[in-house]
Length: 503
Image (cartoon, rainbow, N blue to C red):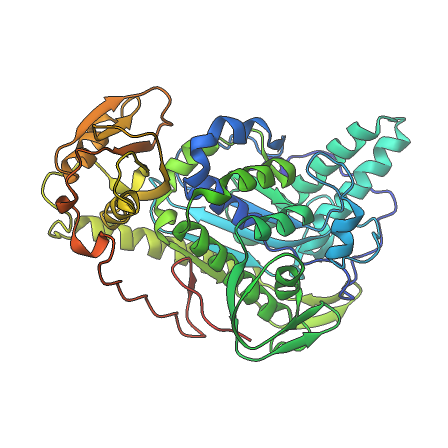
């Protein structure tokens, strides 16, 4: 059980006013994106040392670890400060139309990402922010009240105890708020949270800018003054304030907050899809986003997790929403009713079905779909391939990267490097067998151990000696393009492999 469910005696000064939804507070939907981009896709891990060196951590999990199945709580907050507590520039808050700072922090995007033991297909469970739940050490309230309420109570108690260090008050009270939210989520879902990731308002804005916008599709044009959403019908690319308005809108949607949850899921899937299909140009900006806006638990080894969860880089991620029982209005405002036993059953059945499908797939004899030469003990999805073109043939590195991705390897960066006569696969540590397998797929090129390569990554250098004929025609420059998979139906599951048009 997480630190959020320990037996500390709760403090009970006057609670802060309940969060009120008047369309002024931001509905941030990017915590999961940060993890997908920076921990799951493997794209940025060539810069791993620089990434982790600047990320803010918080001590909210006990015994997290990186072994076994992983349940990661992903939270988006509307903080007007960055991860280090520095106020956001006025030009940013003005651009986001965030309204006045009421002093009440809201955790308006709450998602539990489940990654099975050994990796494999993952599932993300969205929790509506107005879900009416028991909050440990507090009361029954909307789940998004857990973080701000317990943070405010902790601040009051510390001040009453004579603490004057504002940095200490901010850090320790935030920790108490996060622990309360973790405890509430654990009680609702029946899952033990292994890790925690949180992104703030600035991260949302910068993330969408860093990747050049996000592709979405609307069934009809929208114009909602409360959220600021003013978008045309049809497919379009959105970023910055428009992207925030897209995930923020609930008025005028068929199911209100539940429709907004689906908007968030579609948006997150679209971001994951774009990053997974994209190139290396945005990596420095993504690293900056993580360092300025991301908070993770202090025990999380992101590199180990990225290797375990590498199947998500192939789009093996599905978004679901927990079951609800309608809404009501009570002393806490408009709430969404949930039955924790129903939620427990829903979550466990989905996880069990996921495990059963994985076991059935492993037991079923299936002919190899890759060329001969890939050893049975090399699991392609556990490795990310970075490709460097050191030849004079334009587009060859992209062709090699496409070919290797069809074999199940995670696609990393594609770039050029100084001319070389020799093609080689560089690896580090115990990744030699995988390097040899990749080398065999590329016509038997050389392999070389290189301590600068990140574990779990392989770097393919295409030299002037490379024979392009070993690459299937569909992966070579000028070959007919493969047909793009159709978007899933409007009511179907949302995955990182494609997104539907929505309300």
